[in-house]
Length: 292
Image (cartoon, rainbow, N blue to C red; front, side):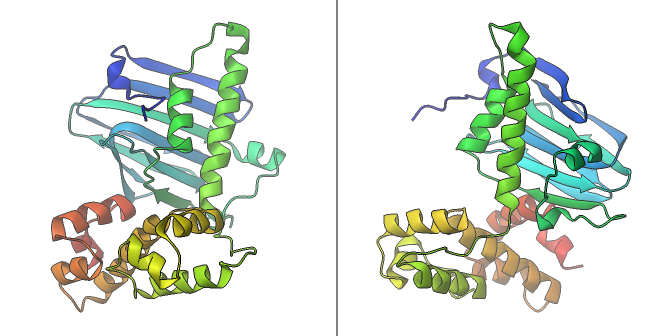
């Protein structure tokens, strides 16, 4: 299927705009040729969402490192942070490439006015700068919303601001929905089977299984498992397995009892290099740094 929102390198002209959709809700978009540079700014309290649709952003927020990479077709990377204090944002860029990104900046007053309940990962305790980052392979709804917002054009200028605000709110809502606590299966004949499979994945018992083996363990076809697992837990079973492997690997690295090669193989990766790439995208640090 052809992507409804193709990469911006098909549209060589730069794109740059910023608007305050409503008081306290700022949306900005940028697509242009990047260059080697670095800068530091201070971010005020509030919610920040950075979505990279093309290229790579290497940055630090409150001395925590993140690598947001979207160099492959269909990839996008999102950094979302809830800041209770002013924190330093540092940006580094060492290569020249096309860069396309969106930024949402939302004030505490806007959050309070709309009575927005944030996911637990973002933290809500005063005095704490809570940061959450995740690398999603957004070939679906989130990526489409991102490209649509970045490239937004209308033949009705009077509605331009309103339409951008609508798309920005959709992007915010659907991103936060991805971070909400996993819902337990609500009902249906597959409830116990899905919970049992999820527990096996969490325990590391299925690290080297493929989709067929996962499905067979709960007496389902692969398509049935995919459909019910996504409906009940909000992600595909293979995405859940991939994240579980990386979480288990990070724990093993901190314990320091095994080599990186052994941990990579135990986590189901074919080589330490592939493992290192996936680990850095997930946690913002290399496996060797996690061992220190």
